[in-house]
Image (cartoon, rainbow, N blue to C red; front, top):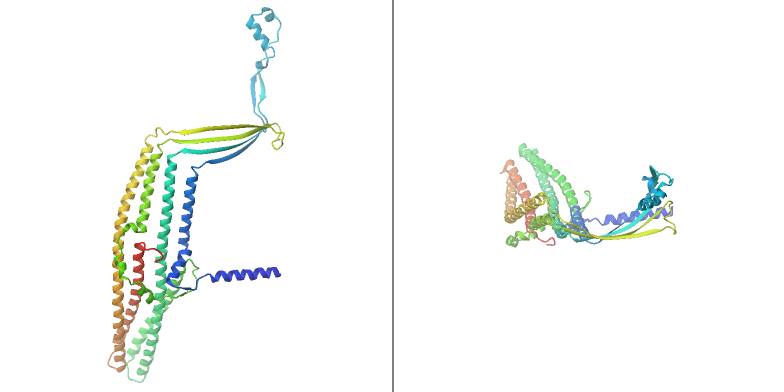
Length: 471
């Protein structure tokens, strides 16, 4: 009982310690760093690199000495019978041949037994046999092996570039998910403040109407506005939950994990406004998409070499050695068993001579695929140039739009304040107040979206420029 209790306590402590490893407070950079270690796509990309390393060694090892061994045991449950002519076992065959050779008539006339006729059934070999052999094989020349070594190296480069591509995409996804959570959080705060103001206005308007100093329409207009804002608040609260779940997925956490984000939307926006990024060099050769396309071209070049190498001869050497044992009884485990050794050394030369044009067609097909890859590399280069220019344009617009939306919000706040003053002083209508409030609420959401656009457009530009992850 005491041992069981100890195990239970140990398990609880282990689970508690594991739970504490889950992040509860994260800045954006901490979220990115965590995702680059724990995102499931990133983990699999790292595994692809390890698999590529193993494949590279697998290809290399195929050209190194290969040793194999085999043990064969045979039990002739019913040995095969062979038929031999009975005359072959004639005991007087020598005398008969001697008489024929020397023409000995006296001997020939003697009464010798007749030559045996028919066949005698005979079995050869023993009932039990066992052989044990070890064989060493070594490639001496194989063109496809040399190409394979180069291909394994290229495949490793492809896996590493795919990992970089994955990291960039994960970073982008985390930033977008983090921003969406902050957007939802800020929207909720704004909606709650707006609801507080609307409820206060509605209460005062209701009292004015009840005292006969206002119109019922004014109360109804505020009720409509309040109802709309509450509906938007409920929707944003649902979106906030989904935004947190999406962030958890991108971080590699359980979808229901809870956390607190320590960065604010405004802080991140200020940090991501940098006009110097617009002067970044438009060099497609430094981007990961170009490097991946270049890897594909190298792979196609090696396929052409591989097809050409199939026309070259291959030379292999081998040597084997072993022992064989025989007996009518199974005595192979005994020291008295006789074993007979043997060994063999040789070369194997395979020379391709004529393939009816098959090798030529394969080579031409590989050459066509190489030309396609070269064309796609050029297309990728031009497309990346366009993507860089487009990303810069989007980023510049996002910065300008953020400044514009910030200014518009200040104007909308002043307009709403003036209309609210006019309304309660009795010189403005409820319809004008509602228009001013709606305009203010729209300006608030547009500013939040503009802030998020600055962050996301900066991230998109960094992604297409292949900006290092630690930046």
